[in-house]
Amino acid sequence: MSRIYDWAGAVVRGVFDRRMTGASVLDAAVMFPAGRDFQAAWHAIALETDAIAQGLDRVPRFHELMPAQAEISANDERDWRLFVLKAYGVAITSNLARCPTLAALLRDHPEVISASISFLAPGKHIPAHRGPFRGVMRFHLGLRVPLDENGEPAAVLTIEGRRHALSEGQCLLWDDTFVHEVRNHSSEVRSALLLDVRRPFMPPSLKLASWVVIAAVHVCVRWQRRFGVVAQ
Image (tube, rainbow, N blue to C red):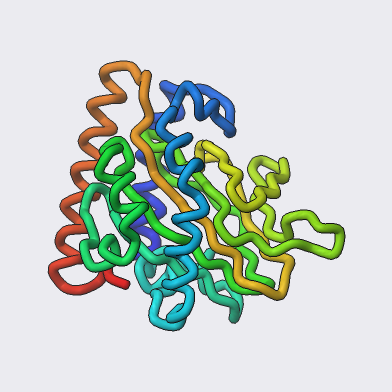
């Protein structure tokens, strides 16, 4: 299954890479202006996240949701857990009910096709990797971010060799098909909101290709939901 995922990802990425260029970090004001609404509500979202963290052992690990990605999630004995609220347009209603602020924002912004809260265990390292699909953008919002001895964010996202240490309430819009990795250097859990957003301003052919990919993944997620794969 991992080989199939890698092959499919490489094919999709290749199609878009041949037709698109651009920076790894994107201008949120232009590409995802709704990001300001999520950022403005970060404190309320963080409080909802705190409640979920009380039962963190019941939140699935990333590789339990996506076994094909075990090499970047189960690479050490530290957890990367994901509380999924929406996956490629499929709403996880039981989880949305626990996050009313976030649920309302997602209803208002249908361009967000996936939403999850990421919990990174102390010392966790997500090794360098690339996402498969350039038709979506990744929006990252810091919720609970531990600090190092110098008072700086101890969890660092590195994209193409450039470090991004996002504080609580800070956000970043970026293209996860560029090589990236994450490391939590602290002894505390780091939580962040991760959104996948439809990329605007694509040529018609890529817009159509993006629609096809998103629709196909949507069907796969619905099938997985039917058999209880994607849940809290």
